[in-house]
Image: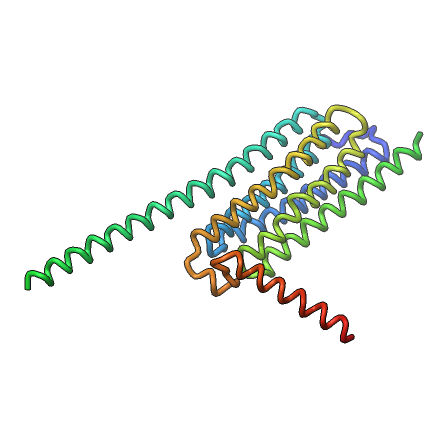
Length: 123
Length: 131
């Protein structure tokens, strides 16, 4: 939004406040990104990404008031739904993959044990 | 009418500032605590309280229209969604972490936990009488 010359005092304050809040939220977003990169476990990363989603939602809502475009709030609502769905799906998929690997490992162990026993019996 | 606009600005700005400070506390918690299940506690705070404060502040700015309704819908949706996603994440962590016992106490049977809780309760009651 361009800063028009005929803006009242109140409009100027609103404009400055929105810009300040957007900058602060962007800084916090970067801190979240650091956590998402550093996080030792996968759950750390998902928590950080979820937090980033929340902050982006506030940013979009502020932006919709700054640009005076009401439809941006719809995008915010959809963003909330998508980020919730992403967390649920990613955690489900990761758990499934982990269980599959575990079972495979067990099966291989069993096979190795049986073979070892057979070899021992022959001798 | 000018004065109402200024009151709106002050109240909305204060609420928005509260929301931002909650986000800051959340960020501090995320870096300060050292295990996922503890960090989740800090992260869930921003999901409900932080965004509620911020969006209520923005609702006051926008006045009485459809934008306000949509923002309220976001807050209500997050109230339902945030606990569910936290639960899923906790389950993910508990299933995939093989050395969970290093970080917290694990009860294999529910009865053990109930027994210990009952003992604790009786101990605190006895302690309270002594004092």
